[in-house]
Image (cartoon, rainbow, N blue to C red; front, side, top):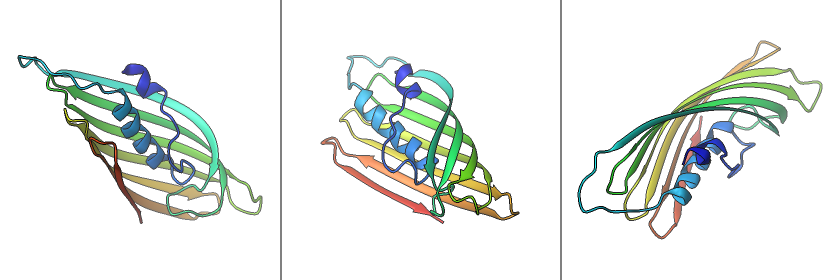
Length: 171
């Protein structure tokens, strides 16, 4: 499972907001990777921590509330604390930090640097259901002195028959 966390796919509208794409990617990667197993006796829960950092570049708005398009270079660090029990449940606590720099596609606009922080949880059931919740804050500082802070809340539930229910709120 270690490699699944290191090579997350870009799911959803990644350009809309870097944090949301990573949260959704984590949920869907884990749903596809987890095998449900049962045992006759209760083995102790397995605890582990994984941290990875990845840098990538894409075009999109700086914050989740839209805006002009920038070429963004995003350095993302994710720390996952995982607990797996013998009954087939997985519980993951995620801490995410990002450092973003942006060059506007429209040269009349100011440059930008931004930071994001977020926390999330992800759980699965032995029946194949999964749920994820994420809360994050992005603060963007533009070279003209403007500062914008947005907050995002995301929730995804996957039923055992793989129906997906999701909502996202940005303010």
